[in-house]
Amino acid sequence: MNDIFKNKYLLGVMFAGLLLLPFIAGDYLLRVIIVAGIYVILTLSLNLVTGYTGQFCLGWAAFYVICAYTSALLAINLKLSFWIGLPVAGIMAALFGIALGIPTMRLKDIYLAITTLGFGEIIRLLLLNWSDLTRGSMGLPGIPAPSIFGISLDNNYFYYYFMLVLVCIVILAMERIIDSRLGRALSAIREDELAAKSMGINTTRYKIIAFAVGAFFAGIAGSFHAHYSSFIDPQSFSFSESTIILAMVVLGGMASIKGSVLGALILTLLPEALRDFSEYRMIVFGLIMMAVMLIRPQGIWGQSKAGTAGIGKIRFKAKGGAVKDAVRG
Image (cartoon, rainbow, N blue to C red):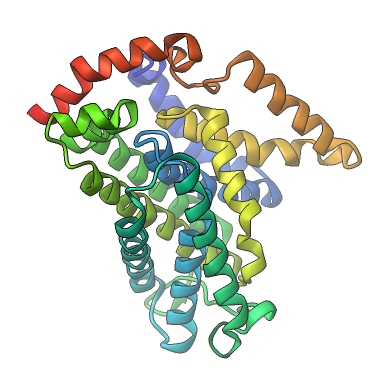
């Protein structure tokens, strides 16, 4: 890990700054930061599948929307608490991740990408046309805010601190996963799946686990988003949403937890910073993205050896190191 993150004093200052931020930032900025936190969780979840396992997914918003609707419908129709809907939504996403993973994990590259893209569009169109349950294009309004003992917690201070707790939990969980036998197996699959198989790693099983765990985290973000915004509709979870999340992963750096956080923050906060230049902000935004990709194709915080010049070395190392480490556990 970077030396900056090993400095306990600097970490303490950063944490104190995050705790004091709601009292410094205005209401609008705080709402933007909360949304950025949701995207941090989504980016981390997709990075586990795409960055660490090497599975190219173009339908990640499907898990996001499934759990947003699951949590919202449980709260509206069954009057279940947010505290029950949150984990249930995550489990629902994990089950969908397994259901998608079993028939598709033998696919690779563009074939897997197209399949996941189709899955995402099927889920969106299903929610759009199942109007008896989801109200279709009219969306679901009036999603209740979280409450404790009947006291509503519908304020930005609660949402900010709860989002901060969720982000910290997901980051810690990701760190543990990556440093575990599971994480080493996923890295081995990404670098050379054939070599991983030859060393006895059940690649299909591990890829399904990656999809399930990543989908679970995405589901948590979806449930939080539904109750925070109090309104959801299928059009907000289109293919463009999946591409935005993927862009955050690529911009920040593949297979990098810090990169996922940075990529999500940049692509959420930068458009807001350019709002005063509304006529040109998308042009400026696109130019910045192009510049970053040309200067650092591995992403801002990605590993420098991930470029084309180091592919041979990475594969050699995977065969001799990552694969063996995964088998040894």
